[in-house]
Every structure is written in C-alpha cells, then in structure tokens.
Image (cartoon, rainbow, N blue to C red; front, top):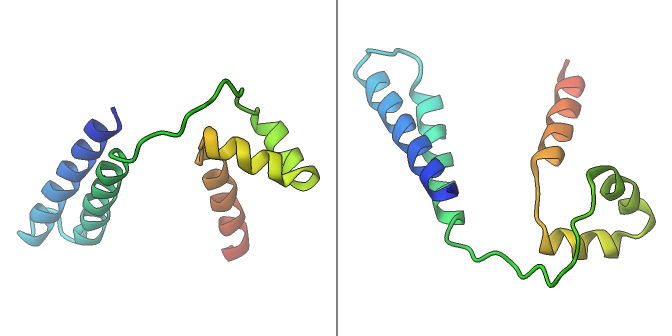
Amino acid sequence: MNRLAGIIVAAVGLVISVLAVLKVLPGLTGPGVILTLTGGLVIGLSFVPRPNADGDERMSTPATLLSIFLSPGKVFRNLRRHPRWLVALIIMSCLSAVYFN
C-alpha cells in the first residue's frame, strides 16, 4: 500500500514539475520537485522489512508521551517494534509555527 501511495505522489509531483517548467502552472516547480522526492522516499522506504512485533502490544500515544520521561528505554523498544511518526510530526510542526510567528 505504501509503495502505491509513493508512486502516486511521485507521479503527481512529476506532472506538476513538468507543467511548471512549461509555464502552464507558473511558480510550482519547487513543490512539484518536493512531491517527486517525497514519493521516491516513500517508495524506497516501502522496501524496508517491518520488525517483528513478538507479541508486544503497541503503547498508546499518551502513554508514550508520558513514559518518554519516566522510562525511555521501554518507549524506544516499543517504538522499534511499532514505529509511528505522525504525532511527532504534528507536534514539531505546531511548535515550529509558534516559534516562527
């Protein structure tokens, strides 16, 4: 599924880049290139095998955020088996927006 999403994102980025270079969509060369590179990254990462879960349950997001200060070893072992990045990306984006404004 991730490979298909990466192919779609890369194709859309390539189309936007080509149309921007041909002056059909002026000013969108940068976003088109970034979409193409992001799609390529997703395609490349789709070939990495997932780690074995070994029957461990995934920690909830609040438990992860609280336990990172209390028992970081346990949290990192859990993140190694159940990687996720969306909440961290949202938190970093919000903090960056607050900092730059």
